[in-house]
Length: 76
Image 1 (cartoon, helix red, strand yellow):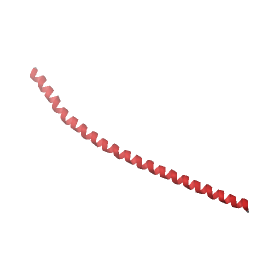
Image 2: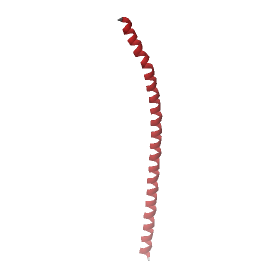
Image 3: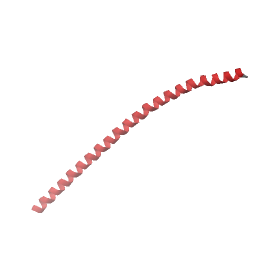
Image 4: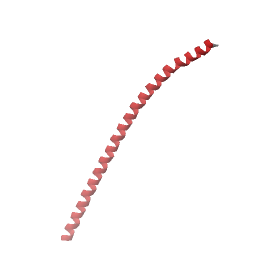
């Protein structure tokens, strides 16, 4: 009986090694994937900020042109 229990414990310990190794490999892969996704999100956010800045700049230029045109019409 004691031999069976010892064998069962050894068998359980023997299985934990590969499982923990596979878990570690999976977690390392997940970490790399998460870093990649975060960098892609940062690039996306930078692009959106740049687009918003260009939009504001264009809007200000348009408003300035309209203001100048209305000033010219008033002067004439």
